[in-house]
Amino acid sequence: MRRDNILRSTSFRLALIFSLMFISAFIVTGLIVYQLVKWEFQQRQDQTIQETFAVIAAAYGDQDIQDLLDTVETYTRASGDRQRVFLLVDPSGKVLGGNIPDLKFPDGWSDVDGDEMQLTDDEQYRIFSGAVDGNRLTVGLSQRETKNIEAIMLQSFGWASIIVLLLAICGGGLITLRVQRRFGAVRGTMEHVARGNLDARVPIVGRGDDVDLLSHDINDALARLAATVDGMRQVSTDIAHDLKSPLNRLKMTIDEALAKQETGLTVIQELEAASSEADRINETFEALLRIAQIEAGARKSRFGKVDLGDMLQSLDDIYSSVAEDNGQRLKTSLGKPNQVILGDRELLTQMYANLIENAICHCPAGTDIVVRSAADAETITTSVEDNGPGIPEQEHDSVFRRLYRLEKSRTSPGSGLGLSLVKAIADLHGAGILVENSQPGLRIKVVFPRIGQ
Image 1 (cartoon, rainbow, N blue to C red):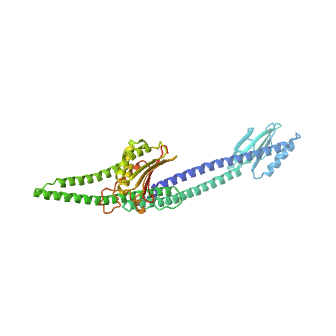
Image 2: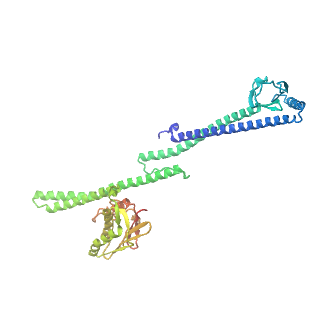
Image 3: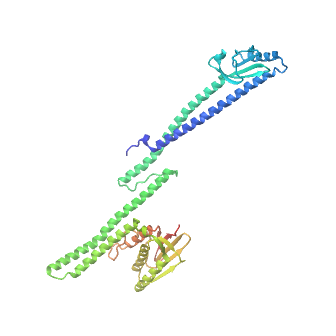
């Protein structure tokens, strides 16, 4: 068996696409979460700065600049690590207190690097500046912790992305190998079939997934293929048996005619017998060709509305006298009117004629033959039933086989194709066909779907 290239397999490509989609979704989601967390930290930091600004400004409640300055100095001493910065400037521009130089900060918010304020140059500060009764108060907070948290988040997200990527690739690879094994079993089965082993079947895991459903369909198709091939083999064997005797008889008749011709005797009788034998051989081949054409669906173009009740009544008019001459009784029992299907009237007529003729030919005198039809909301069921000798139940599945005959000696007239033609016509019309014992006798049912079903 040719080894599969896993990198070129559809399952691997689908797993890879799924992994890429999953990673892309993870990255996009992670970036959104990162931005939301960053924005939340920014809002909390700004809120802290505004609250500190409000507390310091509240110290100027009695219009005492010294209280305001003392508060600024208290906060400045408490921030020895310069994580917080403060600045108080009077209306004349004189620096009254704080731990940073006066950089003429604009009103409101601003972001300032630490080196501009003669602080650590690798930090950035969030600054808020505003007026307090003519004095300018500036409060700032280092973004070191925020940046550290952001760095931790980015690092964690990076490692998580790598882990997810590895898991996605490994998971995709495992899925690919599993699918490849199951499809490999399908390919192995088909290779066995290609070598002529029609009994090979795809193993069913039993999970009921799409591969199991596909395996069921393939096994059903293989079973039908095996049945078709067996049928063809059986037909070939039956044709050989059926034609061997008439061809031998034809050769013997011709040899006898040649012998008579040499002695000057008339050979008219032998020529007529040879012609009749040749006609029977031609009829067999014509019947086989007709069955093949019907099975190919070539006659579906001639489908139209056919009233089965009307057609069966016409056949009753034709075959009643034939059955009577044979010492039998033919009865027709029709159900409700308007038993209409889509079909080929000529083929359907031939199908029921074959069934009636089959009953007449194989049943003794005194037999009752009944043709029935009944309809319900979904189907129209027809049957041809007799109370003759019937056939063994084990032969029910074989009677529709081409050239099959219950009489193994094949000495009686007939080609064994009548019921094969019936089956082909029923299949063409999408009808089910059943063989039942009527105790005594035989019943053959043909069930059609109603128009629109």
